Length: 179
Image 1 (cartoon, rainbow, N blue to C red):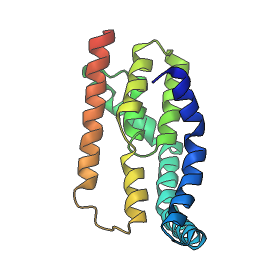
Image 2: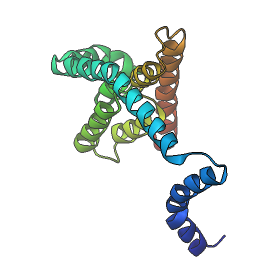
Image 3: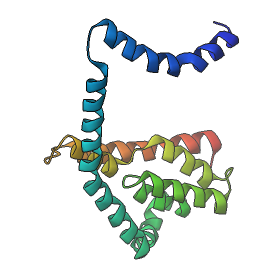
């Protein structure tokens, strides 16, 4: 498929989907507007239901950062993590990323501003941010939306996946860019 055809398709994909869904529903003799209103009502209820856990995560993270505990934990772990090849400016990212994507982006921006995008810390922070997930945020939002109160092994699996993502990012960045 040529480049012009792809551009034409991408320009019309969303308008065709927006027009195609109601046309398909009409062809199946379904009532489009009542179904839309029911979907909008359920979406609004879900959004309202996930607000409390979302606020709890954001407030807890703000308190953790504002109290200076984040910096203290990063300083305490610095000897261990420097032996593993993690520069000190990246440590707050390791601590914050499972909690909040916005806070993690703030840490990445700070690392890039202070250390530079081509530094080991900048490259490592960039790869780590892209290789991990906001585990607590995801659990709060999705489990809250599904009204799940017992996470079972989801938290442990998510944090283990984050640890694997951080370790793999460190290995790849060190292997590709050196120390």
